[in-house]
Structures are given as C-alpha cells and as structure tokens.
Image (cartoon, rainbow, N blue to C red; front, side):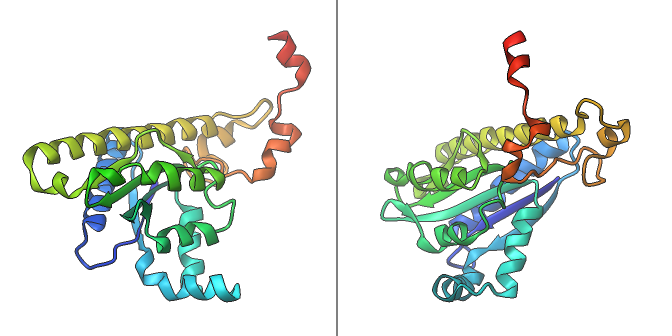
Length: 229
C-alpha cells in the first residue's frame, strides 16, 4: 500500500508538516496492523508554487508538476493537509487540486487535515476541500483532522488531537483495505489468477477504474437482475 502525503507547508518546521507526519505515522501503523505493507511518500506543494502559477496562467505543466500528479495517480491512499487562512485552506493548496487531472483521485481513499490558529477554522476542510476532492472522485473518509494552536500546547489538547488522528487513520486504512478486498475478488467468469494478483500484478492490487467505468456494461448489474433481488 502506497500512502502519499500532500501538504502545503509554508515553513521548514510548520505545524502543518508536523500534523501531516503524525497522520502518516498513524496511517502507517494502522496499515501494518492490517498486514498491508505500507510505503510512504510526501509532496510539499510549497516547492511547486512557481510551477502551479505557470500552469494556471499558460496551461503548461512542468516536469516537476507532472511528477507530483503522477505520484497522486500511482498512490493507493492520500493524506492532504493545509494551513487555513481566513476560513479557507491556503490558495496554493487548493490550486494543486484544481489543476490535477479529474481522474487522478478516482476510487482513492482520502483523509483531510488542516491547521489554524483557533478552532473557528475547524470547518475549512469540510466546506472547501471535501467538495473539491469529492468532485475529483476521491472517497473522503468521514473524520477530518483539524489542529489548532492549543492542540500543540497542552496535554489535553494533544490527547484530543491524537484521538482524532487515530480515528481518521483507521477509517482511511479500513476503507483502503475494503476497496482492495473488493478488487481482489474476481468478477463472474474471471480467471482465478486475477483474484490472487489483482489487475496490476500486485497481490491485492486495487483496480483504478476510469470514470467511464460507471457506463461500462461489464460493471453494471442488469435491471432485470435488480428486480429479481
């Protein structure tokens, strides 16, 4: 299982990066417990600021940006974390998701995290990022993780933050495991080897369908069968 963290850390030692690392560690632990052999990678959108601006203005996608988008497409689960300013995630972070291919997140579990000065910003991930990531066909887990300044400065706040991280990470890995289990099961008439190796030749590999699959007769239950049920 490949876990990719997409963050917009505006400084070398930001709370956004700290939160992303804590979530990734919790997700890795949950994946280990589920026997999913996790691998992790990280993209800091801060390093792509010029590339994103150029693409927005000219339509040209740089090699660095293409590589970052490819990381998203090749990963099994996504953790996305951004700082919140004036009730919205920083624009650089949302621009990354606005410019990525619309199929890049199809059928991928996604966990939203965000940081801010006060709990007043805690709904930014829900109101801005959840609709955007859902539009990209990502499957966003129910629990979002927001970390305010107080969550880093007190024992009680730290415990509460860790509990939210644990809950969201379990949802993320549980969803990924569920999707992987469905992909490993063969369709009617499929060869047994497909069930053991998955579509991409990896054990338990998850099929990454195109958006057009929803109109593919192979994956649609005939209406007559629905009536029989």
